[in-house]
Image (cartoon, rainbow, N blue to C red; front, side, top):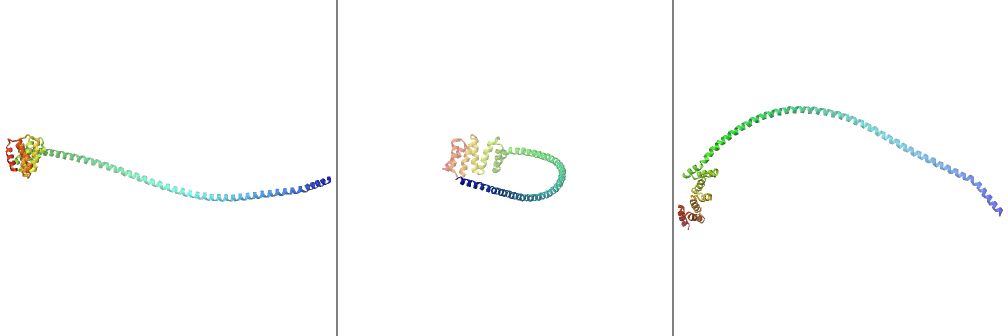
Length: 274
């Protein structure tokens, strides 16, 4: 039994001695592989860096080209700006000259206008003076004419009576009408109204006669001519063929003015109408 255990122990010791160098080799190989991997990774990283560096150099070259191009464009722009500035300066200078010329021309024009306005003012003053003189002359002439016309108009009633008596009824109507229009409060206004109506009656313009006699009666209901006015209104209706319309007027003459000469005439006419 002891012998067996000794053999087993011996084998284990021998096995341990035999495995130590192998372990070291394995470790050395593993270490070498790690170093190789690191070296490969380093090379790869270096290659990537070189590629990136090349790309960077390329980009720098492109940017440099663009910068040069931009600088060239900038120089061209600067030259164009300088040219434009020179042109603008010339234009401004030309405009300044033109403005000065225009201002001078305007100044001369203003002087001419001022002189012309002064001349026009003098002419207008003279014209206004002349117009005023003419106006005064016309006013004086019109005043004289008005006075003469007023004097003539005042004579319209007396002239109308003359024409009426001469049986010039149309002209008397004109004169009486004008007198009534111009002198509604004249001393002869009442007679003018009556004889105006009577002139229409004498002229056989019966409708106007009826209306004018009516106006006369309304204004002067107590005048001595009222019976005659009523009678002539009735007779005007008879002449117009409106005998029924004539009756009230003839009857009123008889009723209200029985002592007048026209009451008797009215009775006779009423008997004819019946």
